[in-house]
Length: 290
Image (cartoon, rainbow, N blue to C red; front, side):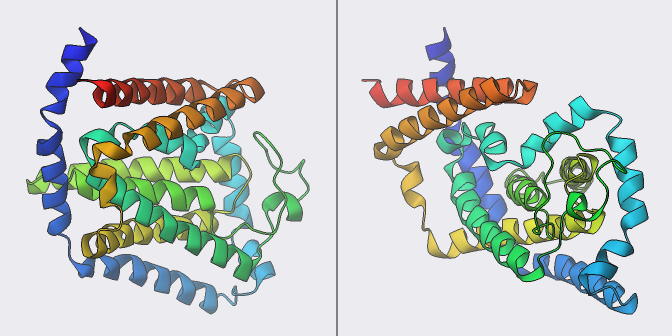
């Protein structure tokens, strides 16, 4: 019964992938203008407040950090599960099925995530902003999960990751009608912001870390789409010969999730593991089917 379901869904593979290709082909470079403008306005605001130094940067948002942290940390289990979506292993586990049904999404995702990793690594090393736990008394705010006290707070890596991934999905499945476009945009951006601000809730980042990281993630997502459109670096993903690689990769990711479950018994890990197992079964079935 499950095999017939897979066969029927595979018939729709090219339809889904064709829709993604069509949507990506309609994107224009002007999409970069708004996020760059917002980043520029943030820099201008910080400059006007004499907050380009690390101490002032932290000082001007201290009260907002304590307020948001106290409100969100009232739901520790929920925000700790949600914040895991900013981890690429968790978020991408839910999207592994698209490797088979919409490989163009994954082609864009790989490029986008490489861009986002570069942004995150370089900017964190440039700014060296200390985490809240390295500045404030840890009894003055709530920490959910492990205490993170390094000097790599800005920008938020989790925010970059979630916005990078959801931006790729945002444009992949963008509806045709104007009202539906607006609703789809609002839904995904709101979801991404909620997940991103859990980083403040768990006590790992300041609000501006999250906002700046979100904008960088959005730029990274768009960049990944345009890079893949021009260079077709990852076109091998659509080749059935690459399936053994993905089967091995999904097995490794499943093992990593099982290890995480032993360390932290989080609900989101179980759901991600189930998603990986379903994708793994489909890859094995399709590859070995005669």
